[in-house]
Image (cartoon, rainbow, N blue to C red; front, side, top):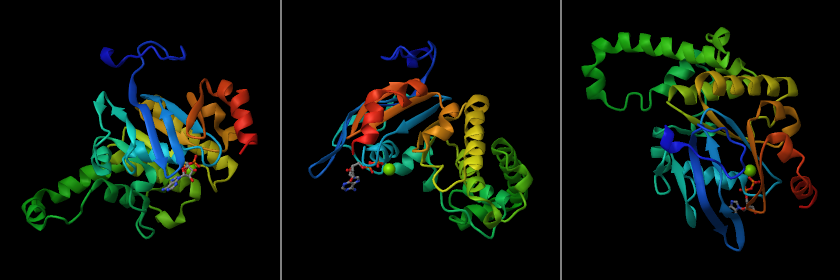
Length: 269
Ligand SMILES: Nc1ncnc2c1ncn2[C@@H]1O[C@H](COP(=O)(O)OP(=O)(O)O)[C@@H](O)[C@H]1O
Ligand SMILES: [Mg+2]
């Protein structure tokens, strides 16, 4: 992957690292508001990147432009060296960009394992002709799918819950189930907007411990938008801070969290 190697303007990146997604001069206006003002970010494959910033700084808009929910006024989104700026959201999902809330909500009455299996079957029952044709292979297919779903549950640490109803999971476990469901759909870059909101501190640590493990051991890439930076700073590889639509700080998380312009942006508002 030598062609994907970047030196990085911050001098922070190790050589040989691969940028899975980058934005180039993204601009997005809503009427008179400049929600994104020339945003350039790079997300490294297999790393956990954090995006912080006070309310209204443009974080969710940036996530929406990356996933294709919102079209930028100008600028580009590059994923695996391909310009995806004009690719529809569902196409981006197909090539591995996942936003956890985009996955259909878990079925409360299905088990945890069934929920992962259902997520893998994109359009169950969509084509009756094809399903009839493959009927004889169906049992075999379901068995393989169940095995794969079980493995993914092991990755996120929910294997012991496989037979529980999804409705019996805690809020934190539900986040892990969302991650499992996006993994089985082929996600490589997983974008989570405030996963710690409404989750108790102990479970926040559990979730982020898992996220870190998935990045280290499975090469998955995470972009996390989060407010509760005190709880999660230990699990992050790289941080960006935004204010008023602009990236105001980037680099090592501790440095970004203690950057005077970042602290001031939270006091301002
Ligand atoms: N659909 C929209 N229509 C109009 N203004 C919007 C819309 N989405 C976001 N904004 C504005 O853009 C700015 C950035 O919002 P947002 O990206 O949601 O910030 P954050 O996620 O950091 O809180 C805010 O001023 C917000 O009010
Ligand atoms: Mg937001």
